[in-house]
Structure formats: C-alpha cells, structure tokens
Image (cartoon, rainbow, N blue to C red; front, side, top):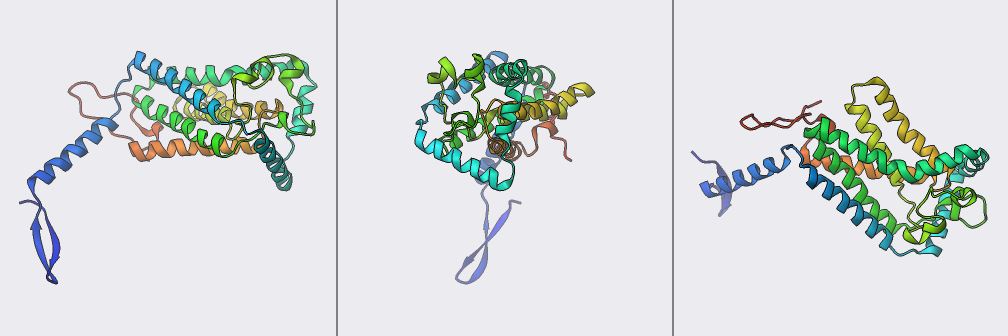
Length: 289
C-alpha cells in the first residue's frame, strides 16, 4: 500500500494517497544523485584537461579583477594597523632578517614561484594513482577553495607588504634579481599585483599537507606533509608577498572547500573508500567516524 499524507479539508484531516508516479520520480532523482556522488575511476586525459582549463580560468578571472591600487594600498594599511593592534605585526622583522641571508632568501623566492604548482600537481597525480576513490572529492575541495578565493580578490583588493607605502618592506625579488613572483620585476604586468587576500599559497599548501598527512602510510611523508604548509607560511612572509592575515584567509577558503565536499558526498574526502567499485560489485560507501 502506498504512502499517505494528511491534508486539511474543511477543518478535518483527510488522507490523500501518494501516486506511484511521484514515488518513481523521487526514486529516479535519488538514483541519479547517488550515481553522480558515487566515486568512480577518474579518466587521465579528462583530468589533465580539466585541471589545465580550471587553472587557466582561475588565472584569467584573478587577473581580470580591476587593479584598484589606491583601495588596495588603503586596505594594506588597515591590515597592518589591525595586526599591530593584535600584536602580530612582525612581518617586517622576518622580511629583513631573512633578506640578510642571501642564499636563503633567493631559495625562498624560487620556492614561492614554483612549489605551489609542482607540489599541488604532484599530490593530484598521487591521488589519481593511489586513491582513485578519493580523487574526485579531494579535487573538488581544491577547486572550491580556489573558486571562493576569487571573491576575496574582487571584494577586498589588497597590496602585498612589499608594495606598501613607506618602504618598510624589502621586495626580495627586485633586490636579488630573481623571478620568485609573477607580480614583481619584468613579469609584474602579467599578474594582478593587488590580489593578496586570501593567500592561495597557504590554501593550496595546506590542502596538500592535510591530504598527505591523512592518506600517507609512510611516517616521514606525513611529517613532510605537516612541514610543507608551515614552511610556506614562513616563505610568504619572508618574501613580503603576504601578511599573516592573508594566510588566515587562505585557511578559511580551504575550510569552505571541505564543507562543499562534506555537503555533496556526505563525508570528508579522506573518509571515502580508497578504491572504486568494479563492475558487478556493490557501490562502496564512505567510512563513518
């Protein structure tokens, strides 16, 4: 016998039968959602194309945001005053101390320019090969993190410390003639210089670090996973590319990315099955804490 619902007619409850068509439609919708959310083996060339197009779109939108120089410099002054009020405004000291060690700051410039690409892609490849059941959800967390960061670039233009008025910070790329930032030197016209909030160096490195720590079974790799975002934090401050609070913004963006995954898949990506179901095998369900 079909389900019944109670409706009020003339002040009295009356049972109205639910049609089989409604049940069929609801079942079809539920089945479609379940199929979409079921982890499946990613396709290599599709993933390469998707990642390339996504990063190209992200860069295009980020650089298309108007470079509101006056507002960005004003916001930088406001952030600096806020950090002074909070007692955490030590970025200038870190910048000058590290800049005095030439080999170290040059290494940090190249670290800033390259590792957020190399490590992030490396973790994606590792997930694709070793954790195919978790790949799509973890990739979705990364994409959602990156997408929401664009709102910060648009609504809160922020100059990096090295471009602030007053000359308190050293632009380490200019001083040491390296190519450690797409927003410095000869490459400055290729990138929006006033999109420092949030820091995606932190958002991406924290995504990498948490993923390695949660899924790796090798102890030294798990340690490196934790050290990577911590080192990145030192680098973005020492090179005067970001404030501490930019790192907080990147962390909040990552929290949003994981929330999207939790809502869509019903679990965090690391709780999903490592492998995907094969033909004829029942669908694998997320592990529950």
